[in-house]
Image 1: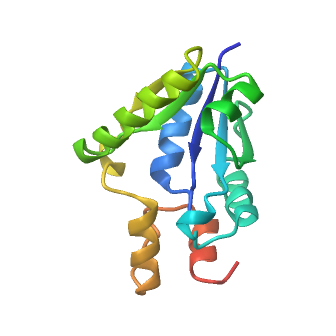
Image 2: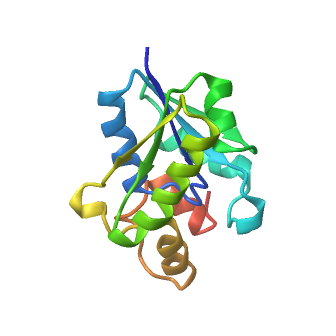
Length: 157
């Protein structure tokens, strides 16, 4: 059984994340959505809220598990027995950082491979940061997020 982790802050989880996760479940037996504590990023939602939103958005997919973590990604991967770290690349600008991160992770844990997936075209420009900013300014983000995330962004959940 091949297990992959998909780490991120998921602040909030978007339809782009969901698309990548759904496609990853075709490749891997199990995909662990690893929600990072990331206190340095000062997330809009608490860790518990981000985990709950991810669970609601991804409910029903038996190959997906949601877990929180607050350690090095490679240490978490090894803890849960994952062989692969899944990362999304939206644009060329993502590549340099992700390339450095993959190299460092390979150095720290040579037995854990990094795999990059690109989003479907309609999700290539979506980021959690943009979704948060648009929502905070009263813009409509309903096509970018699950209805439960929209409610949380609007403070109605």
